[in-house]
Length: 181
Image 1 (cartoon, rainbow, N blue to C red):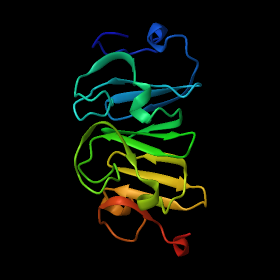
Image 2 (cartoon, rainbow, N blue to C red):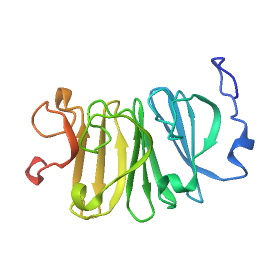
Image 3 (cartoon, rainbow, N blue to C red):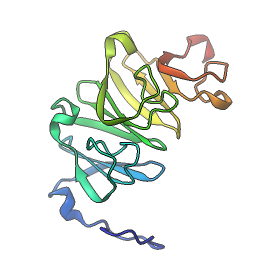
């Protein structure tokens, strides 16, 4: 909408920001949003305090703002998801890119640091070299499914949210053992 006024009724987002792209998927985070175009381009908007918008800064964006194509290694995204303060994208090649708030390991990069721009989660180290098919985000955790059907979780383990029969945080993607299903 280009302003900071709360809207109490459905209001069309000005489409000039999408540059004529057909939007095929959207995700809503805690205070930010992400949109995916049919051509694999990604737009983000909203609160950017932790870098969850992926523009290498912590600035808010009041209108949809296109991520630079090189932000995802030049690849096209096929899926996006948003958590409380983090954002993730999966590319056509099955690569997982993450950015934003990392305080509980929800970025899966082995630490609790925030990332202001998309970072690749190395498939060989994180997923045994497998491609990622789909992802989802909770407020402080993330989940991924790989091509072999395995479920991987990372981030805050409070209340058993990660499915590992404990409440421990996981800083890297950790496979849920098959006997859990």
